[in-house]
Image: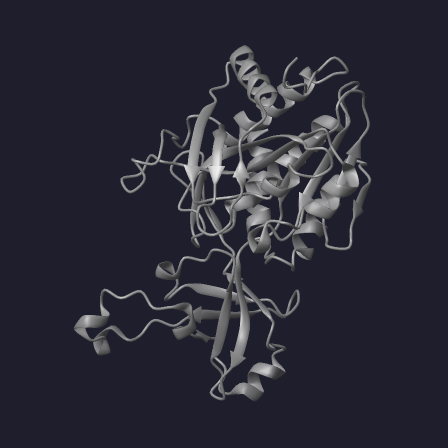
Length: 362
């Protein structure tokens, strides 16, 4: 399982898929599901769904395909690109980053976010973080005419240059671990679901536009009206010097469960998990001897924040893998946490049957 997860994760990390432009990621996932003889459906927004029939409360298990990045705002006469951020891109980590301008497969253009020559940097500039509006991208072309001939227009999507590599023991670094790791786990769950003989109805969904507006999953959730929603995404690792006051989530210590999330920056939304789901995963982790870490944090949301509100309300929980350096061009996760999360999910799904009650007072 670990080797399959590593292969899928590293392949997915090297596929660009900005919010609203997830096609290449979806095609890979669709092809892998077809190899399992699993039929899929794609809705108008680009969400990909695979349905596994069963008995009991219906489960929507999902992870988002998209990643954050940029959109071309203006093409200067000298060929430099000005951009808008798409998603929570950290401005302090932008200068000198490699990027990929997504024209079309086989026609993408490499570039670099410019960083002012150090030898010309004034003393008062050395400790400033420039707004993205003052940054520009150099694609190596002489003028706007050459840029347009290369297929770059206003509105063309851009991502951090895709990369993935191993560091240390069983650890992966690179772009868009958020949430290609969740997608890799989804494929592994599909391998289990495609051969099981009993269990609840499961709708495995790979969603769009999470990094953009958190609502890309809504049309699929409104169509499916699940009883249970389980969202797979990163959980912030807090085992680095700059994160030690944020919690007790360690890389390599197993999957994690979000007990509280809240955005706190203008978006009044978050997720408090359903108690029956918390109990289910705690019991499963104890029985399978899989460590399950807990997280409570302000400053982040997932698309579950909106999925939980469809229909008459959905019994929801955010589960995830610890990850360092979120939303940067080089994130880090531990493969053993991905294995643990996959095994935990399979074990929990086996416990959901026709007698599984979601009544809060039952």
